[in-house]
Amino acid sequence: MPPSEVLNLRCLEELTLDNNNLTMLPGGLGRLKCLRHLSLSSNPLSFLNGEVGDLISLRQLWVNNCQLTALPDEIGCLENLVRLSANSNSLRAAPDTLKNLSNLRWLNLSHNKLDKLPMELGSLTCLGYLNVNHNNLREVPQCLTELSSLASLLMKDNLVSSVEDDVVLGLSQLTRFDLRDNHITDRPIHWKGLEYIQIGRTGLAASGVS
Image (cartoon, rainbow, N blue to C red):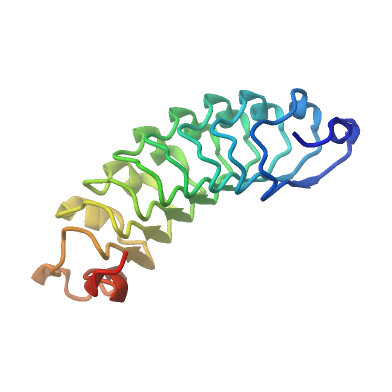
């Protein structure tokens, strides 16, 4: 565990605890009301205490490669959060409470085990970047068409075999839509001119290298 003295630093704004073999966080972490940046990446935590939802000033939360199987519902209390990165875990679902992150602009859930995204994700009108590469998604969720600010949608290496025309139309504001290394390998003829949609195999996938 990190030293308990950290919890007495009530004006602390940034806390980085990456690569420390932490298996748990100290109780009382939520008392750090001024904390704006918290990074816990590359620690074998396996779960994230719901007390993280008490960090009301938090703008960035990094929990990459922490062996997480779920994110706590309380994460939806972080209404000031701008960036959330939880890649390289074992998440099978994202909490519905993400809909409350009204200021979220950047979300990375890549390298997990997601087979769907919550419909409520469509309420994140500030979200400009979404990375769900390397998951188990079989379709492009309809809710993503409601993300009016979305510019980059990365869905490489999932299980998508086709994309409905109304979904393509709803995502026409994108500047990048990466669908490489999915089951859809040929660009439909009527996608002519939609060069921001990336289809096909990357070099590593084409050579059989994982």
